[in-house]
Image (cartoon, rainbow over all chains, first blue to last red; front, top):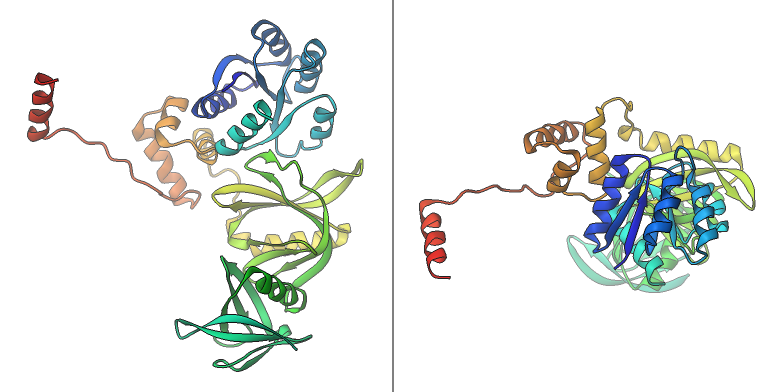
Length: 120
Length: 267
């Protein structure tokens, strides 16, 4: 089971992801509401995995992914975005994202994806 | 005519028979003894190891055929490619997304798309996938990156085994538009205005989609059971949800109180 940092600018989505991952037996070590806060919290908490929204204020998810991976090339980040932004997949994967979740999502599949990334 | 062993449903019972597969027809041997022109077939449904074949007529004659997967695959292929349906050659990716998670080994496959009375069939050399029209939750004409180029595709969201999957169809734009319109028309009874739900009801829908139960929804949205019941009622009336389980709340009877009291005395 992993220690996970959840990054999303809406509390609703953070709460949803938190509930899903908690039900999958994971520990939620932190929540960030923008990319800059995510980078800061990643460096402080060193989680096993990050679920990262793409569209966020201040610093978007792709920029945050780049910063996190620059500081820790082994960082495991799953990108999470809305329907219609699937073109971001390539950019995220190119920048080291380990997985990609499209909203709306279903709990069992999210848990499966997180487990796959944590235990490849 | 190539003959294959099958079981046919006759008056509610399954009987051993054979089907002959020709270029323009299939022949069901005794006891049915019937020639079926492929062009007369208007629908094909698959359930487990059974095919339901519907032909033109009033009422439409229906034949149910069971066999091993290899035989059914051959039958499906010839029926889908020759029956009366809206059919086009295209590339498809099915499923591309499952439960919001991208399917990692998803790839474009060259084949045919056939829209029948009850389902959309994707047929390639390796695959025969059916999406029942009643399981289609959304259809969208959108763009997707294909070979580093933004390309028009039709995106089909569908319910599959309790989860939601997304498939894509790729072909020339004019054909895509025809396919999109055809599918939209076939599933129009599911269309909504988009303003039927208030913000709380929309959030409840999202949480139900994600698999949360009523107890989790109440906690997450900080709403009472009565408030949630009101939202559920509205969603039920719109046909957006269905009841799968009724949760019961109970209180102890005198007998129960006595049992608990006694149990507490004798730990």
